[in-house]
Image (cartoon, rainbow over all chains, first blue to last red; front, side, top):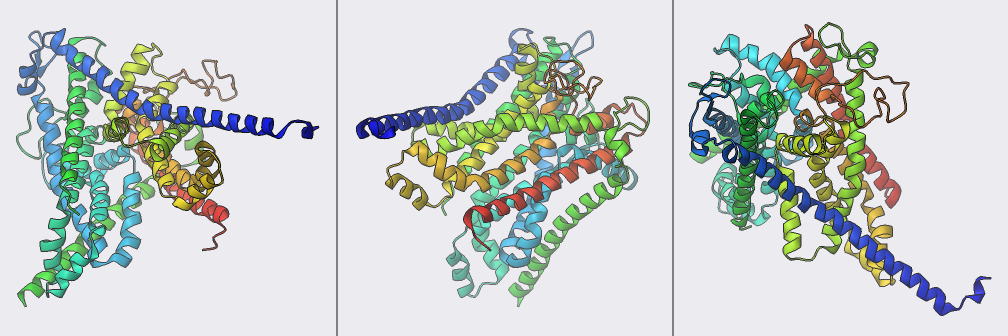
Length: 305
Length: 296
């Protein structure tokens, strides 16, 4: 019979088992959180040591690696200059940000200031759907629509910086728009009302009051978009042409760090010099994404509102 | 007058931008669906792909995509949920919490190709497994975990304070409160977030290129023994997913109908992403209604 167990015992037991649950539960979730640290640290250490091997073991000159455009790992006198790819990465990133930033911020302003009711209803789901399109699909459309279009109507081979820029711009547009919309809609209402009360038009309010107030967040949006563009691999690889030479015009074929890694890491022998230099390029990507995070941290520390 | 003209010009420019954005999306979807849906047939979905002849299907790739997604979610959801609970309920402001938060931020912003390279180093070379499904799923876990942690943390943080306080006031321990009060209430938002994250994982390719590989062995769908080499359930076999397939047929270009196959496969991917997106909203609101008895 249950009644024979004294009340104190029952209570002791139940409270004890609950405290045990408390301890294991807490331990479990703490472990889950610590896995994040473990993953980040191990990615940094593994890619760091592997990326430095080309310089330490194989004696590739790091300055030559960063500043020479001579990439001929299979020749008798091999050259391991990655400048072409570094240049290509920065070029497509900056160009696509130049295209996507005005569009994204403009879309955000339209949604928050000009037509909040139908703008939110139509644009918001549209942008969320754009985020969901996989990057290979962007690459495939770039390859089948954009490349022939550029070849026939603008010039060049069709493959090249311009095509890569357009594809990346469409890809990072939703990132920029979403964050810019958040930034604009969290601005305090009295900013707008104060400006309108002084007789300013909507455009004057947007230009002189709202954009300066939201500027750090808007810049954060652009930096996040650039971080995405810098690391995007497959879509760019399909449309950029992948040449080893420095592009001389926007219609020229080019290559980026990500595309050269994508193409070559499976074809080179693991541990060879060429393979190791590809890992060094991966290390550059890693360092750049740390750089983008630091930039975003700096920008958000400047936010006043 | 001048400023009014400028205002009108600006308004129309912003309107134009909105139209451009909507136009880009509509034309993207229309292009993929119009070109792709005509290629989707039962035969396309159920026949194996061919490496050099015309008329291959996407059966194995579709299965691989779904299988890798399932395994990834089995690993990510509990880990992400745990991390989210810790961050929302137990994390005290301090160095450890800051470090975890920074790590989530770093992991979330890593390019997927870097995660693929890490996977190649860790799950392919170091473990000696070669290209495997489990390696791909673990790489995708790294990719997906920060999203899951954020989703769960936000879902728990957004709950009303009274819910937790009332439970604690009844003398129930913190962990018991989390388990029986907070998690059930946060469940709809967590589920919505998880489905959206699943959509992202389904279309991911760069991280899988070097971990799950570019090939699929001949599969026998009657073989349900997960340790057999021809079994589709074997996690230690290479597996090409749908997104990787689109990329590889377009770049290696051995099959003559690469364009048609990628159009069909792209349409399947887009439809899957749409389904994930819509079902996330629908299921989320459905469960929310059931749990809260809110008839809105």
